[in-house]
Structures are given as C-alpha cells and as structure tokens.
Image 1 (cartoon, rainbow, N blue to C red):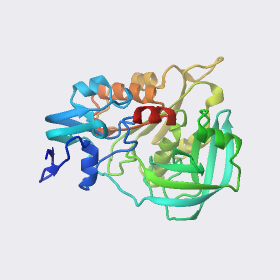
Image 2: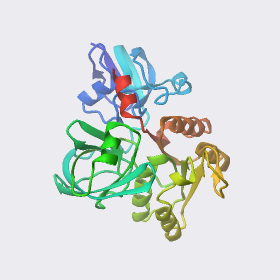
Image 3: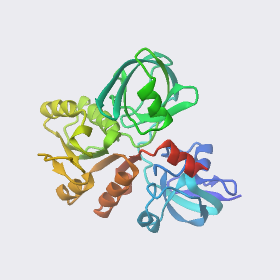
Image 4: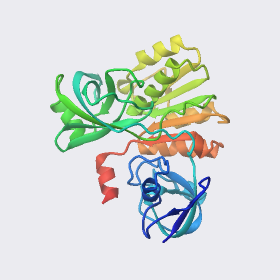
Length: 338
C-alpha cells in the first residue's frame, strides 16, 4: 500500500493504488485546500517532492506548464502508485465551516448591466450561514438546475448577495427568464479555499474579471469592516463601459477608507473613455514591480486568472500568498470530468 509523506505531518498517510492525493488527504482528515475536484480551478495545488504518480487530464488554466515544471501538481488529478512526498502550499489558516443547506427567498433581482443579474436572498431556514469572505455556494433554482456563485456580501451580513453573469447556461437562463422575487432558492455551502487570510497584516492586492468582482467585494467589505488599515488595492477588468457595475459602492468605500483604492480597466471600449484600457493584468504589472509582503486574491475568467498567476509568480510572489478562483462554466467542468 503506497504511503503519502506530507511535509509537516508526523506520520505518513496510507493510500490506495490509483487514489488521488486529494482523496487520500480528505479520507485521513488532513486539512487541504480544494474546490472543484475536477482539475478546473487550481485550488488544490501542492508541491510534488518525489515518488510514483500519474497525472490525469486537467484544464490548462488550473495549472500552467511553468508551474508544473517547478514541481507543482493538482492534488485532485494526481494518482498515487507508489510512495509519494508532497508539501502543501497553503497549509496555514485553512478554515472549515459547517456545510449548510439553506432555504432562501429572493428579495431582490436587479439588472446592473445588460448581462449581469444581482441576486439577493433572505435566509428562511437552515441557518446560520457562516463563511469566510471570498468563498462561494451552490445555488439550486429548480430541480436539476444548480450553479456555483460567490457571495458578494461580508460574512454576517444579510441578505446574501450574488452576481450572476448571463452566460447562456441552464442556470443563468433560468435566472434571466424565470426567477422572480418571492421564489425559493436552495443554497448549499460554503465552498472554496480562495478566501481572505485574516492573519495577514501586510498589503492586499485584489484582481477581478467581470463577476469575479463578487468575491473580491466580499473580501474588501469584510476587511474594512474589521478595521484593517493596511493598503488594499483592487483592479477590476471589464470589456466596455456598459459592463461596469458596482462602481458607486466601490467609490463610497474608497471615500470612507483611505487605505482602499480601486481602478476599473476596460479591455475593449467601444468609444472614447477616460478610463485605463487594455488587459487588467497589464495594468497590475505596470503599477507593481514587486509583490513583497503582499497577499493576492484573483477571481474571474480562467484566461485572466492564468495571466494574473503568471505575472504575480514571475515577480516573486510565493504561491502560498496567491489565492485564485477561476470561474469555469458548467460545460467546461462537465467536459473535463468526463
């Protein structure tokens, strides 16, 4: 029976041949960061130190070839076939909240842009709902129609707030065409490991693409409400002016808190604009030469997350200080899982 030697663990873990590293860690109750468990998000990265493994297919956005060359693997897609040694990249401050199955009621459904719906849910039963800023939950709108969305509200605040992009999938179609105020929505969670590391006392860099703003806003709201005064800089990437939303909220936060600043970057503006243009990651790279002492949080489309990861790590940011959440579609997740 293969053994998994986890740096920092006194005893090796027994694994079944062909079992994934993540499955073995979970079975033994060893804290581990993970989310999709299908090789899409990249949350479960670990350093591979040696041993006999076989790596299953994964999304190119979840683990770049550069990181793989540096010895990083995805625990959920790495099978054990002999004794293996690993090092957890993010072993500190792993939090676990009780998983809840909430019954909620739609109290508001707004359209801040042409393709985003802002959903607010009041908890009817199953609470309390404890989570850490930056996590997400699974929303079931009807039988067989469920999707993962990040909370945008700070923990403890109600109603729950979600930003839903209308991508054409079953979940967003239901929200666009059928969901109404007063409807019941089942919420399961919390999930995800790309949450705010509250013990960190240095600068924070947050990068969002599209509705990746939701978890970043949750982190900002929570950190500012907790009285944090360290520098906090948020970059938000949108395509065009018509895609910009929540700017009034960001402006109010920036006006009240001198340590918080934000910038909205447009990648494909249809007309003249006074905003910065280009890729949001280019703006980050232009403004920051060093990421020493920084905790970075990234959320949004996989290409943006991959570009941000490449930029930040190439300039010396340790992987343990990077917490990224790639928003893969249900179609992409199903294709890889198959």
